[in-house]
Figure 1 (tube, rainbow, N blue to C red):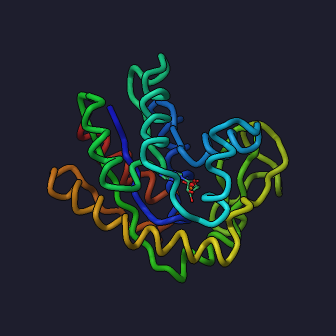
Figure 2: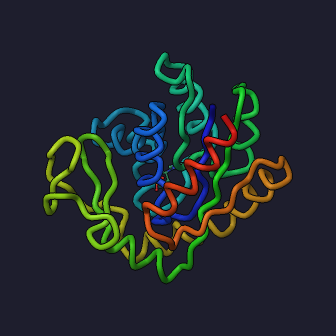
Length: 212
Ligand code: AMP
């Protein structure tokens, strides 16, 4: 099973991908997390991606597609995986067609820009296990501490006003094209991402349960 979550930055993709990952025992693959790790480690990939990420622009398709091909080929993806932040362009969606899967379920998270800006201002992430929280709508059990690995939570460096604006613009231009692509394929499920985290998760589980 391949689960794809589409949506603008801050729409809750990471939070739901974490919950789905736990529920169905399949890994969450976040291209953003892979790139951030590469930047932290100072690898060639990290050096290439860093500037684009800082500005809120997309990293080139060839690099990203290469990352995904390598990652989904690993053993832990045999039973399935969740893609969070990929595909983000039409060539990326088309490249995914060359990676076969028995079932593909695509969710499109819809939410207003005002709500996104509010959410990104209160987003917290775990630098170690990459879990995503929100200090208002999805707080960790202990303030500023990851529920899963107890590391101190941080804010993402690109969650600043300028980068949020740029990322949202990029999403508006590229995102709709991909949504249309999957709508035509017939496997797109629209989700009202302004709802409560638990309510959204229930809706997602119901859809996945019916498909598998
Ligand atoms: P995210 O964590 O998904 O918000 O991604 C953070 C940043 O990583 C984005 O603003 C892009 O610069 C880069 N990135 C992540 N995924 C992709 C992708 N599929 N295509 C191009 N760039 C990406």
